[in-house]
Length: 113
Length: 112
Image (cartoon, each protein chain N blue to C red):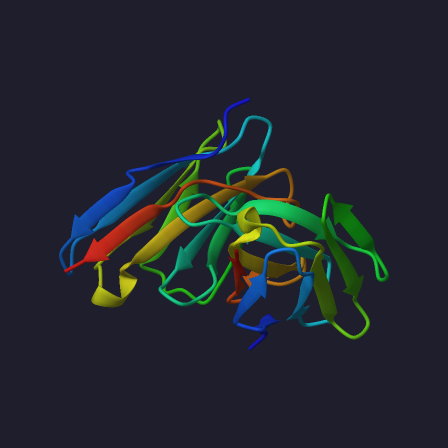
């Protein structure tokens, strides 16, 4: 069974502080690593899709890195704001696998005012 | 450009019944993936349709089936509903098998 693991499960961060969390995924048959932000009562929103080892992507205060050889990705949030409160999901995509896309359980981020 | 829509938003069924959930993909997308999200879990991949053909399936029994239509909209059918089928069902459309996905708002299914 292939699993995508995310840690921590939940995180409380003071407004203005920076934070990061981890996604580990199967490195075999890898094609793409996705990060999504899922706010309560909304649809999951794509943040990044990364495919190459060493990829780094940035969107405003949020950035992500990818290591396909060891099977992990980090998501960083700089200067956390209340609107960053959400569940952050990562997903591993592989074309040569029956279960094309495997999601982790997510990291629930709470920003404290 | 319209986003991904799903219907209905909520549904209550009883054990043994059958249900059909619908998803309209985003304009220009040819792939629809369906997920089941139970409480406390990440979305679990049910199956994917690419150009009207099933293109991958997760660990779900055959009573979960689907269709994709020529306009790339899709249906998820579940037969012989069980209590454990109660969950949020998400669909996502994309251009390609493992490309960036755009999610719909989900259908909340409750099986009594």
